[in-house]
Length: 206
Image (cartoon, rainbow, N blue to C red):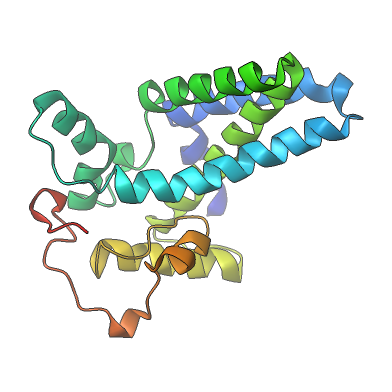
């Protein structure tokens, strides 16, 4: 059964594009794998995405609905509509028109700092690797299947609280670290049910 979910996951256009770029990035790095700095850049890229996952989700995807039409339309596609229809497949994944420009910007900053093309590729490959992990965790959280690991089962439960209990808590999809540090992790039994968790355009966002 899990095989079918894996097949469906990789059949998504946005996931497929990032997966191909990730493989190319990893293959490019093979000749430089003996350099410790390559592994450090990979790890920093992964950590950067793990941090941005929370910050973007909380402060951009849950921002007060803007009055600018094009920005509202973009946020509806990126997140607002996902809360309206949490299990709708095409709304589960970040579109490449959003993710790829951010990856390019991050890579440009990395190259400006390091002046090393391989380090830039390693950093971007780390970002893409964690992005794929994020997309998988998010996808499985909304499918009628239990994750294999206790960690995965816990994160799925936490993400569904965010969708069906209260949208102002539990922003982490792959880990709860910043929720704990920044006060958005709460005991689920102590959090009041929100009437706007399924409609962010009417939510009194924090």
